[in-house]
Image (cartoon, rainbow, N blue to C red; front, side, top):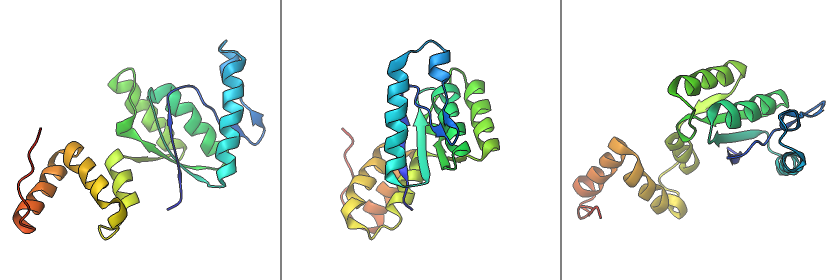
Length: 160
């Protein structure tokens, strides 16, 4: 799967076919954001890819608006729901609902990681992926530890 991954921490908006939306300017955020927006849109277009994986600091603003505009512009958008947060649980969930209704595909960070890994025979990324899984994937990480020690007879991992 060829995709472009973007994590949004500022207001970056996609250019729809009818031109750049002036959301930032209408909110008084000035020329700086408009220039960043144009540069960002051009960088996305330059990749030639139509699938985007996106997460943001605030779900209901920094993720919602770019996602809706990207979908409108013809992109297939995957939103990483557990790598984004809202101002409240309800705000986060309603924003996710809105994006899904518009066509976004919700995924988790672990799902994205494992889809990129695809196959455990991909040795060039295996160790790095397993390290992330062991440290940050809860029960799945514990299962990996179990398999290493019980099935593969590896020494027990020491948590520092």
